[in-house]
Image 1 (cartoon, rainbow, N blue to C red):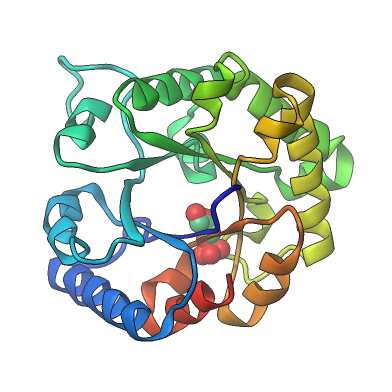
Image 2: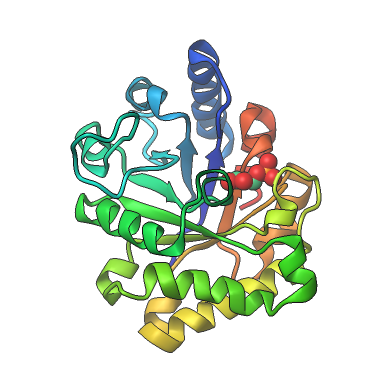
Length: 253
Ligand code: 13P
């Protein structure tokens, strides 16, 4: 059975004390209010991962993710962080291929395939992000475009490796815009992506992969999105920066 996951991508937000305050508020609220099985993954700036690990240590449903990692193991790559370094501080997940990394840092499907390999080689689960732009949605085979992102970055994996991957569908036109995809639009894509995974790995494997939706998710929109059969939770940006709002999204899973 695939997991229900609600992940919060903080992007480049929060100073140190704010990061600690948000994490402890979330752990306390979840402890008091969240029932049932849901994994909560916080993706803070990497500089806070070691500190925040202490604040989630007694919250078994919580985990940490980095927002990026290098495809290289080590060496002269100033400013980069390797998957081995993340493993060495106990981080279990890493976002790979967020649209902002693709757009502002020129990350290609081939580079992302190498980053996925780097993460998996250290036992870290990639949260692989994919999604189309508004122009692609309006003018192209946008489902084919997103399927191709998955083909080029994930289809070299074995079934066993793929089972460690979480997929996050984030239409670029819905990120930070307040324009959430409708539950029908998101479900259409999630179903197509699951079928795409099934075409390569079989339906038993595809049915075990969590596919998250991201793009302007709020407490108001989460319940309807998460109720769709192929939507297994969310990857939340802006609304994950507020403890009350994010807890309500977790509760909507
Ligand atoms: P918003 O929820 O702010 O639209 O961001 C989504 C996102 O990019 C999460 O990775």
